[in-house]
Image (tube, rainbow, N blue to C red; front, side, top):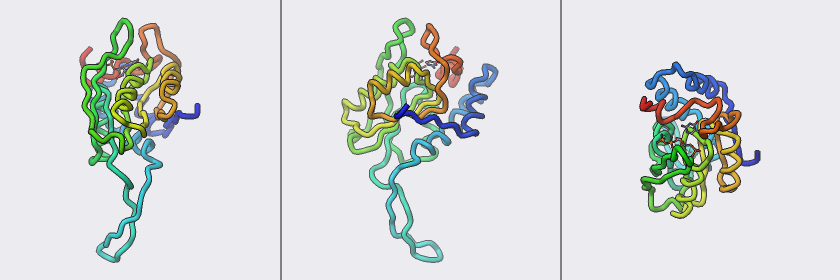
Length: 209
Ligand code: PRP
Ligand code: URA
């Protein structure tokens, strides 16, 4: 699929396998999510533009590359987006952060918004939306729609796991937003869970089940 990048780096796949295991502890799951976010962040930012600036090393003056343009925005879909966000901020500490509070209605699977806060100038920045799970895509579609309403026009969506149905729905709704994921799994089940997946990402991160 044109707008989809599957990050199949062996370290990503190895860590993802441990996260999927039902025996993995809450603490272990959170630590792995943060670690894997470093590797995913590396890939989703691979083609960022750089510009040369004049610096002096202790040895010699030189022109050296630095990131070009305004600081990035990382937009975290609550709750589970926070796990990816932490790791992304380890690598890009100066990024601005947006928070979008959404939960899935367990019956209808519709995304219900309960919070939104974003930098006022999202129109001038690359916005990377993060959420570990792209299942029906209701949450991701709603988050990106809201960010676009606030002016965002340069967006990427980063997740850990996606269902084929979710990728299809998301790319239809937002064909201008590239999707990055570590895996496209088999399918969604009748409850809207990714199969085989890893269960409920928020519950596994915070031990709320
Ligand atoms: C999970 C996950 C995504 C959403 C994905 O959140 O973190 O946001 O489900 O499902 P979708 O693609 O079908 O919308 P959930 O709604 O369980 O909320 P939580 O993060 O607060 O637990
Ligand atoms: N949300 C999750 O946390 N897990 C799924 O499998 C689907 C949606």
